[in-house]
Length: 159
Image (cartoon, rainbow, N blue to C red; front, side, top):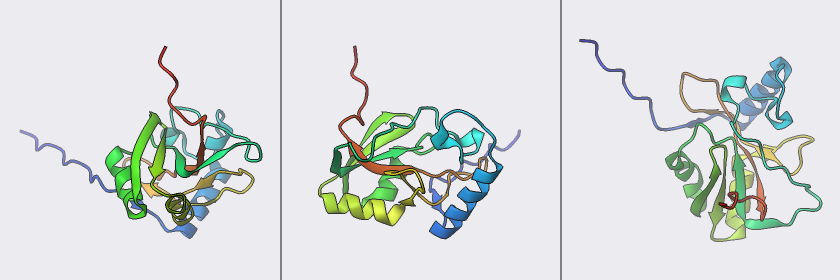
């Protein structure tokens, strides 16, 4: 009988911010794909299934204690808890397979999380991105895109 394949580790590895930025720049140069412009620097096999919720950075009314996170297709709630627990998040509201809102007790906690975990995406205000995250060895590193949430960042109402 063949031995069963060992389960993959449940921890995610976040690469250094500078390393992540360099890897993202390399992927942007190599990428040829189409589709969602925001996903152009993500390898095709790691692209989110859903589209990112776009907002006008100048006109949007942002919720200071809530972060909108995009690119979560390969992460679980336990991964999100691991990433955000150090900032005292209250709960996670999944919008779809690709995005969620992370609620914090205080606006300064959300701001600290946003600034500590991500860096600005040049020419893509108000979006920020994380360094690359290695979810498992079978796929390329991914990265998350973050910004403060708006009222439009919610699950579609059930009919």
